[in-house]
Length: 169
Image (tube, rainbow, N blue to C red; front, side):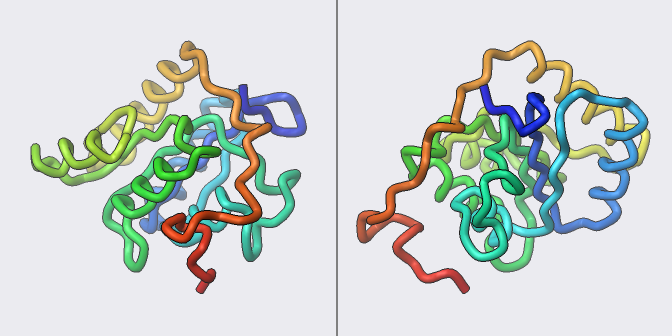
């Protein structure tokens, strides 16, 4: 299981909406969950964190998450691309990913599952509903047997079609 230096799990949330991140952070503190919480504001930043490049080189400050909650609609590298790249990397493909988006289209949901999402949850519009959704996500995944990704380091010499082969921008 993925554990941070304190021995607990790490939840990584990626969303470009500052308001949603603030609500999630407050809820996390208020509900006193045992897992550590890491918040990122975009797809590129998420990939940098997971691949450990740019500002996220140190595994002690950028531990592998036990679970990723991912928004889809973000500028630049969107959630679909993040999902595609994560699931294409052997060291990360088993990372559980919950897509948490306001999009409700059946085609969008199907695309996420086709790309390897483990769950798709429609993001509720309000603060109290967001809090309740976060609590339910946490409770479910707390019961799950999560894969251990801590020993899965990315290859130093990636294949030409790997997201690692592209220079960081």
